[in-house]
Image (cartoon, rainbow, N blue to C red; front, side, top):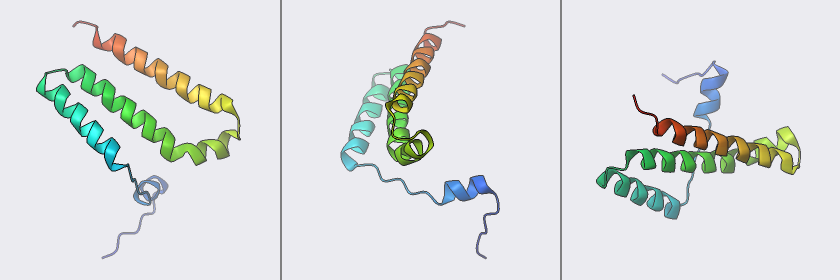
Length: 97
């Protein structure tokens, strides 16, 4: 029985393909393995965040250009908010309790 997606969110998510270069997948896997082997879980989370942040921009670049036009302010805003979220994550990782 074929699946018919009526929900716009599920159809948006099901129609996507993600192709990441093998060299970056190998680098990501190597870094995650080293973080797990040496017990650096917080560093592993930050590396995962950076990977997702970078590829989120790479694959949505055309959407951002359509939305914001061909200006640099959108790129600066994306980078600034991503950096701000990373700083908040690092501060949160140093909190006890």
